[in-house]
Length: 107
Image (cartoon, rainbow, N blue to C red; front, top):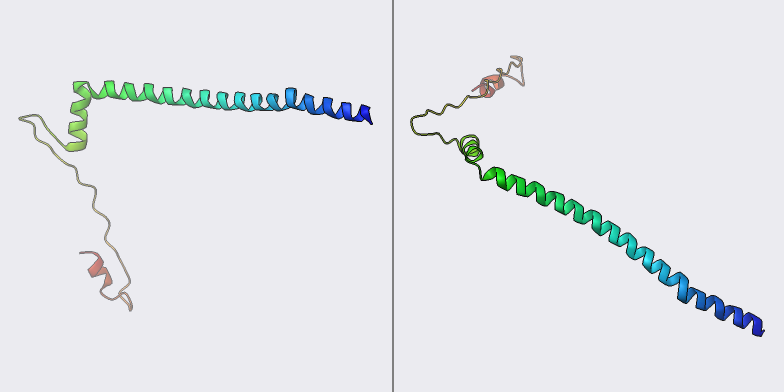
C-alpha cells in the first residue's frame, strides 16, 4: 500500500515538474515561431510600402499618375481620348413578339 502511494506521489511529482512545464514550453515555442513569421511578413510589407513611397516622391511617377489617372496635361499639350468601338446592331426576327424590339434596342 505504501509502495503504491509512494509511486503515485512520484508520478504526480514527475507530471508537475517535467510534463506540464514541457507542454507549456512547447506551446510557447510554437507561438513564438508563428509570431516571428508574422513579423517577417509585416517587415516585408513595410519594405514594399517604403519603396512605393520613394517611387511616389519622384517627379516622373507624379507626372505619370497625373496623366493616367487624372487626365492632366502640360501647358501647350492637347489631350485626346479614344472611344471604345461601337457595338454591333441587334438583329431580331420581324415576327411577334420581336416586332419593333430591334428598333428600340438599336437607338
